[in-house]
Length: 579
Ligand SMILES: Nc1ncnc2c1ncn2[C@@H]1O[C@H](COP(=O)(O)OP(=O)(O)OP(=O)(O)O)[C@@H](O)[C@H]1O
Figure 1 (tube, rainbow, N blue to C red):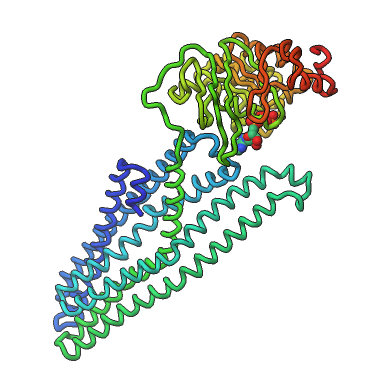
Figure 2: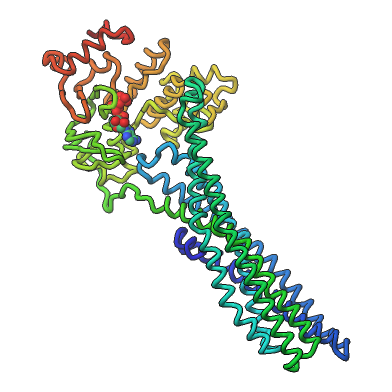
């Protein structure tokens, strides 16, 4: 387990763990010596001259004091190692999560991740902090006692030694019994975590559509049932092992007891020594018996570690070995094919060019792949075929940080962190001054939100920006993009959920954000579409028409009928002005 932990975390953690192990082993050996010293102490007490007990007693006291000091040291070392490992595990998980392709983040993964970084990390941390001590003590103390027994009576010591392989074998058998069930329980817990998050997030839907129709409640119920079943299986499979192990310990003790009695009757072992050795035999079996209870906790920690290792082994998007720097900000797709995990192609043979400083509007039916096209530019996923280039360089050959520094995105699913509005805007450019943050806020009309909130700039937005409306969150997201000031802007018609009064102002702010930039807009407004330098009409993952508004209207194809249909729709408030 420790070896596996170090494999996962890297050799730099070996030192504190080794220090802790040394402390634990030293403590366990001292404990064994203290137990063994009981033999001469008891022998002297029951012998002809009780005064002989004093030197042994003082030695016992000295060893006991030393043991206490080492115990204290090992406690500290255990907590230190445990806390260090937990910190590193969380760090590694965090680093890995930041590198994973966005396709990995399916809804249930959020809950699993929560479970991994809290419960699983705590389970693993418990190994050095709480589990290793009893485990080491269980094996090292009896081993020390057995070795020292040879000093007093080799025949009894041999009897104790012969029981060791049997005890070890049965211990292994008992832990192996529930290992699979343990793994299943840990996996079931992770799934339940995901379902709980999903259930909470879907509360508005559940309320509107009624509990009976929403699948999520049923999904959570099912996950809880699976978890209960898995926990039951852990018990059912673990109990025979526990009982078997206890029986073997008792049998080992009985074997030593019988050997001792036989030796006392026929082998010249005196009664005082026998008594002392039997006390020792009790101390020999006691710590081992305790390990049986630890088996299940250790199994849980092992499964938790397997899950963390699994996450850390998830493939990330490969980083370029010798990154190239893009020249300019032209964006090109060359014969791109792409599909998500289910293997269904979402984009097929998509080729397009966003000339530097121009605006391209992506239009097409829902599900035609518009968002997917925009998310391939900052390399949220890697293409299956063809290439996406920025500044003439394949995005796979650009340092991810360089690529991200060139792209600003305002998507519809805006996520705000728990913090102030200023904190959230600053995400766009962490080094920005307060004045720059406020200027971006002013341009995106975020200032108005700030003035409305009771704590002004210090007001917190709640997790996910829950305390702001959808439109307000989007304005914060625009402010972020304005602050970032990147040359390539991806826009999912960000004004879609803004209230009418602010719409014009935000539109102007967006013009300031987008002026002179390479702009890709997933356009829903006719005015945006008509103003584009180029319009790409996407259908079922293919570009079926391309050109300017006038060219496409004249061509009288898919775009022209799309335009006519939308123009007629009353919801399109600006339709009359543009058609
Ligand atoms: N993360 C994902 N995992 C699996 N499939 C996805 C994922 N995101 C999108 N899809 C699928 O890919 C296809 C294209 O989706 P995309 O969001 O790119 O379309 P869109 O044109 O932007 O749609 P809309 O206008 O409704 O937003 C859809 O069939 C969608 O179900």
